[in-house]
Image (tube, rainbow, N blue to C red; front, side, top):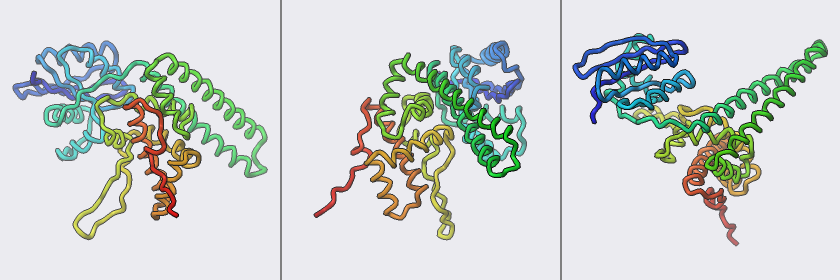
Length: 334
């Protein structure tokens, strides 16, 4: 059935601003609390206005997840969780000069009516739990890196108190213990689910992706809708090339878009470096790019992008990593 009501929800920590456009083109706005009771009131309000209600919200992490799950479970509603970059460009195309919660909700209602609709598929609860663990591990790793930098700075001068140095060292050891515990819990969760265990074993068949890297990468790709193509995976990771030309005089250097999932992109960086060192076919691919005159960082990004292609094929075909499929090492001629 064709939707006859279009709804935009702008979500913040405490409240949800809702803009509703009915079939007769009338527009109403209302604010609800971002709580379980508020979600129930919101759904009751929007479903009174039509038989098929199309709703668009932005992906805002944990603040939008509970509402998305509630809307998905409600019959008569169609939900799209839009990329904030897409909605921001849509607002610019409309030449909206103001930005408030009410204005954003109104823009999302327009987005729901005019733009291509992609239905949201809720991820499995276990995948969401694993993603929470992996992102916590990333946060702890970042803090450990900062503490190590502070320790280096503190030790660079004799004026730093030994008490301060000891405190930093104690905190680094504490962060490392917490990382070990979180990794152990994540591996236990993976072992409890056959589908995640299979995907984990496929990932770790690549020399360069060890336990921690696999835990970082796995939930970021398992949460993606099943119908996505490998090119969409690459774009989701923000590793797709971004060209910029205008006429004959403006030709900027090609870069990656960086418009996708920054956490997935970061999780792929270290495995790419390790794989370049230890996986013969990946090393040969990297050296081939360097021989062509590519800068090291450009070649590393190319390895990351090709790893996404490899992981996509491995999970789709349920086959472990095969170096020859990644890159065929040239046979030296006599």
